[in-house]
Amino acid sequence: MKSQMSWFLGVASVLLLGVVTVLTFSTPSPDFVQGEAARLIYVHPATAWASYAAFGTTTFAAVMWLWPRTRRIGWDHIAGASAHIGTMFLAMTLVLGAIWGRPTWGVWFRLRDARMASTLVMLLMYFGVLTLRQLPAAPDVRARRTALAALLASVNVPIVHFSVQWWDTLHQKATLAKPEKPTIEGLPLTIMLLSFVAFTVTFCWLMVHRTRIERWNDQLFNGDVESAIVARQREGAGSLAASGLTPGGLR
Amino acid sequence: MNAYVFSGWIVAMAGTALYAGWTIITSRRIAAQVLAVKGALTIDSGAEGNAVLEGNAPLGGIDHE
Image (cartoon, rainbow over all chains, first blue to last red; front, top):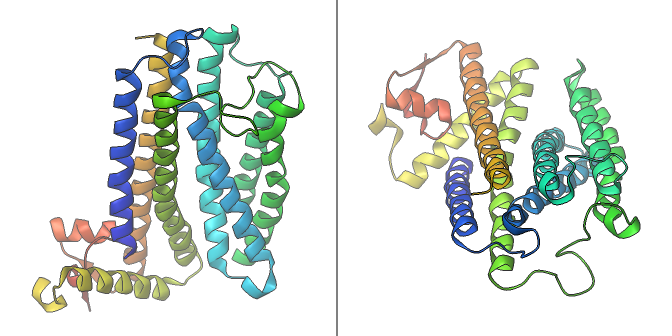
């Protein structure tokens, strides 16, 4: 089941990102003033959104682990996986923002800008979460450290998002997520929303694989290989049932 | 095409592709390690064995000894 989901999400990610790429370069630039550089609006906010989605998942998993009734090591695996993916997307967002900022504002990065500074702080905090996970510790200790650090880092997410509303600095105001009507419409809005969907599906695909890595790492380094074999057998049985084949027929 | 847009697109698409590729390779490597550590399993060579490492194949490719 999980393997089929991974395959479906993988194919969907590649197709959706391909469609967004084709639409981006086959349609006119969405902004007359910024010209060609405005095409980056189809990818920069979408990667930022993917990092928000990842860090939201991290926070949820951290709370679920900290709550005694729902405490399962699987929540720690989800928290670790989503923090890893979110950090990658956030780093990508910063690089894309710099590439967009240079032709638009004349600077790659400005530390005195509220959005850029808060995003950099958030990136460093999630690097901290990932570093904490690498320290040698029992799974429970590692999970507690991760959960607490992730909760602390999650405070940054609303600060980053609302920074352009709270402080009037260089970064432009929100295009979509604001109380008034969005400042983008028609085909550009459609492409932008499609890009959001594409990166969300990609995030889900990466989550399937990253969570497996976290789980298998635990099984490998905590002597729980037997349960790894059982998990693999279950996956195999699921694939067999789906394909209608019998184990004997494939040996 | 604008060089900034091109660079940005390369960063986004190639970055995502590289990260996804690295993730999948790591996933396969650890799956292989889990099987190797057990030591009581053999993996068939060829396509069937490779598919097992992906976690996508039925366990017909694995013999319990």
